[in-house]
Image (cartoon, rainbow, N blue to C red; front, side):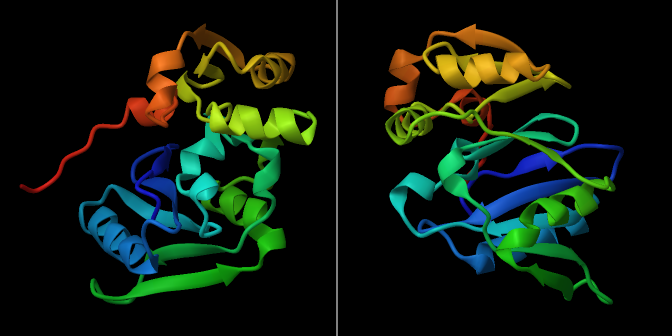
Length: 194
């Protein structure tokens, strides 16, 4: 689990998408799933198996929800293996369905109860795409359906989102981004045991 879990709200109980990367493992996804299911906070979790490299450490630097069934995605992410996790027959069991990389978007759509999802990926050269990924171009915070907060420096991604019906509230973020965080992850509260 990358430390980032994104709710995919529809009506309670909800769904969520998470990942694991070089910083965590699939066991963390199991712990998260058990806790979400036990609390009634979710009934379905889609977990994405991220490449084990620093550039792919956090899901929200690569993929975030901008509207219901609409995601912004970093071009270099590609399609990855994913897993649908649901409560099992007993409280201690989980039902896990694995999906090959080509089914990643279908698994997310199914979790949302949709026939498909829309994935918005700005077309840009490799160097620009890498710069915007480093600058958290896909790390947007949806403040309401179809309205996101994004760093103003990600001009290509922001323009692409606007051209596809997403309202972008552009904010300066030069200093915040130095800490490797975009608007979405900067808004996530963290609770840790001492």
